[in-house]
Amino acid sequence: MAKIQNGKKVLIRIENLKQYFPLKKKSIFAEQLYVRANDDVSLDIYEGETLGLVGESGCGKSTLGRTLLQLYNQTDGRTIYYGRELDEIAPQYVVKTLKNLEKIREKYKEAKKVEEEARKAYEKAAEGEEKYKAINKLRAAEKVSKDYFLDMVQLIGGFYLAEDLKPVADILLKEHNAAIKVRRIKNKIQDYQLKLDNKVAKLRDKGNSEKEIEEKVKTLKEKIAEQKAALKEAEKKLEEILATIEKMLDPYRDHPDFERLESYRDKGIDLAKLTVDEMRIVRKDLQLIFQDPYSSLNPKMTVGQIISEGLFAHKMFSPNDPKLQDYVLDVMDKCGLQNYFVHRYPHQFSGGQRQRIGIARSVALKPKFIVCDEAVSALDVSIQSQILNLLQDLKEQEKLTYLFISHDLSVIKHISDRVAVMYLGNVVELAETEELYQRPMHPYTEALLMAIPTTDIDVDKKEVYVLEGDIPSPIRPPAGCKFHTRCRYATEICKNVPPKLEEASPGHFVACHHKLNQ
Ligand SMILES: Nc1ncnc2c1ncn2[C@@H]1O[C@H](COP(=O)(O)OP(=O)(O)OP(=O)(O)O)[C@@H](O)[C@H]1O
Image (cartoon, rainbow, N blue to C red; front, side, top):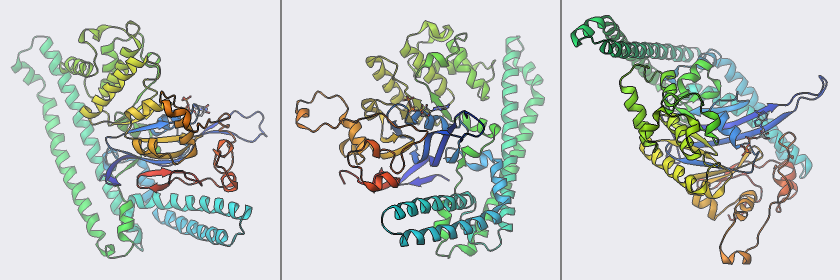
């Protein structure tokens, strides 16, 4: 069940993502401090797009890329992945939520009351400091209730209206168990198939005839056939349960809230809640390309070995598979690497070629999403454009989605469909590329764009606004809008209330109390 937003398929939805790194305490009595590298980030990444992520050094771009790939333990928030169905993974967190449905609904109702009180207090509060305090309290209360609500309705949707949640939990747990069964059988088939391919290749190498081979792999083939029959049965059972769930929803369909609640029910996977083993299954879909490919390529491995390593780890090929070599050479060809490079070592390549090896290693796994973290920053300008073109071509051919991280606004403009601007751990503006560059609404974006060197002779007629001062510390960021200390439009509210990321015009999101170019 794909998630559709603004007519586009969402591949990854990030909600209130936080990534804090604890600092070492000077003494046991000292306050625990954190580097707030990502502080409440929410955005959607659409299937097939390149989302550019730009901002000054240290604003948290790499941390966001890595956190959403779950290379760090996400401190808070959701990272929902729609590239696979929940049933395919059948994660443990689902069981935990379903077993506690009633408790979560109670907690949600309590949190909603607190939120209502906070809202009343805000409405009554006197203008000025009291109002600022009240709005911050209200925001915090809204977040707590939203968290409980989403935990629940993402799994149960319209069933929220059921008085008794016990039968709901029972049938959804049944679905979960049936899905686990399907997954286990599929894994077994994959394992047997790899064993079979391996054995056939070995027997052929030893000079066995086709008839002899057939005889020697008979048992394995029987096992595969057995599992395939079991899979059919298990899939049928799962479908029956899904049909029952749809029927059980019938009594609630006429309720005015039903559609709204159902719209939250989806089969997205919350990556932040997966166990290490569950994450391993999804890991193949989500890849990372680094700035410095050399440090990420094992110097003792040849290009062929580097590309094959992941293929074995994700059971896409067995080492003796005769199709492996052709597959590796084909991936290399797609990435502009000559086939005689296959036996060479990383130190024998230039920076651009090394980056191609890093790309080939990721693309070989047939991923759906790649974080390109400053992927061309270390390269010469002429090589940069070659690598950018390669990434564009691969995106089309392999139907990839990119999060493209760079501090270079020209590179971001060239490659991105949409651009997110980050400042001190927050996304402050997000829009389609043309729109963002033509009509920046956030003063920070405006300042970044003005800082791009230009050869335009009219430029001196334009007012040039230089961003002054250093980026503040992410350990104790400024209160209110974090940019207020460097913003020429800042007023009292900016010092006290963090602005929300709001859709100021269709598809153009901005977090600012004094939006520009509206
Ligand atoms: N593993 C870590 N432990 C502690 N602090 C970290 C860690 N990783 C990043 N940080 C801090 O988090 C903040 C954001 O860093 P991050 O690397 O994400 O920024 P960036 O925008 O990618 O910058 P750059 O372009 O320079 O890499 C910085 O203050 C950094 O020092």
